[in-house]
Length: 329
Image (cartoon, rainbow, N blue to C red; front, side, top):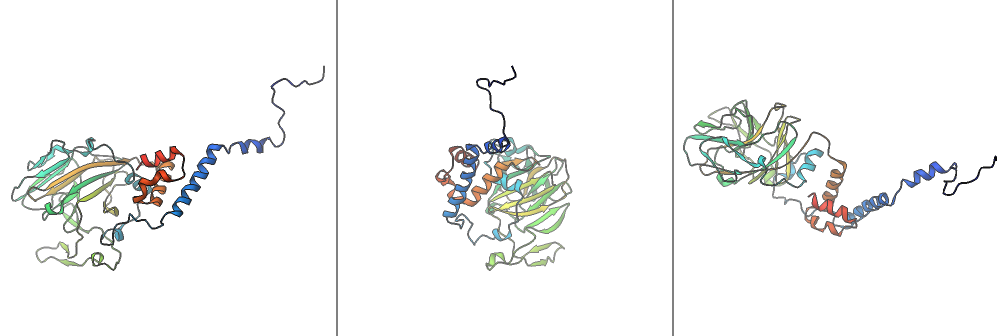
């Protein structure tokens, strides 16, 4: 009666080593795959040329001016852009000067050859929160003397008589004048951007030389940087900052203390006849920190290098990781 009979299929009683055995069981084959896959990536990177062949040539003035990007911005810039037909890529058919004509897709705005007029146009959709990146394409040959890009509130004026900086002329807008590199807000020049420059042997990177204009108190840069056609506008609505990316280099914060919780729109102004500006919304993110997987993917792509991105499938990784790395860039 008192004997204990072992039942068929019953588990044996736990011993003192059961806790250790349970902990060891957590090291599953899938976890081992991830660990050794990561080691494979590091080994592959070490075997590859350690010098990133995708760097911009030394003739570009912007890499020495680059500012360290936040993780949110770095992940956003390295993510696949949204579809070109996204509504945030459209210029507004209503909020524009009558001298700006839009293409059928509403992604290109062209200024009519009108004299003694400063004209602006803003995006159809604005943002109140999150970090967002737009691409602006504006040929340097079609800019003229007052080519300005930036952001504005909904009530910003978009047409004025004469030739003036329009975006940044009042308290409702913030603009970067591309010819002189000056920042404008509330009708005042806030200095040149980027504000700090590192010394470099190339003549293109020598320090700004500033002189006072004889016709006004506005300061003009004698050695303004030549801004290329493609510019990325970076608006962080959560931090209240506006910055720009040129030649792949984030040039830092141009404006800060932008109003929070207020809808802001990408905007441009021009005085040049037939000036054509294209707008495209690339991507955005919330104020939450990036996911760990996104950060790991970004690190791998940075180590592999821009020109070796198409060789991701040669890394000793599981197919699912290959697919993730190739589909998120």
